[in-house]
Image 1 (tube, one colour):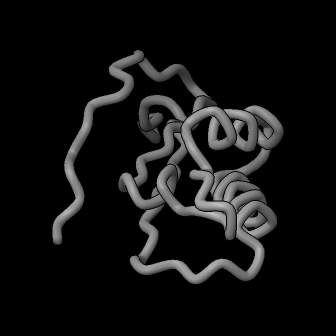
Image 2: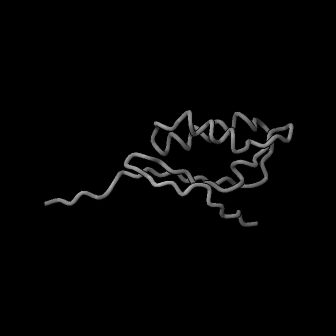
Length: 93
């Protein structure tokens, strides 16, 4: 089954800002008590790592998810993409 595409944020990006795109499976992964990781935990993990590089941000979110779900079986894949806007390309003269 394909994940839905949801527009969450249309904020303008400034130089050095990062954006994360993820499928719904990230927020709906569950622990053994059938509690979902959810948007609140996702935002908390992002806020904890907001000054890091995109790869470190993704790693931090994934570590938070793994700690939350522990050994609960997951039934679908997870997709996350994080990128940083570095500003306009400077011309070489």
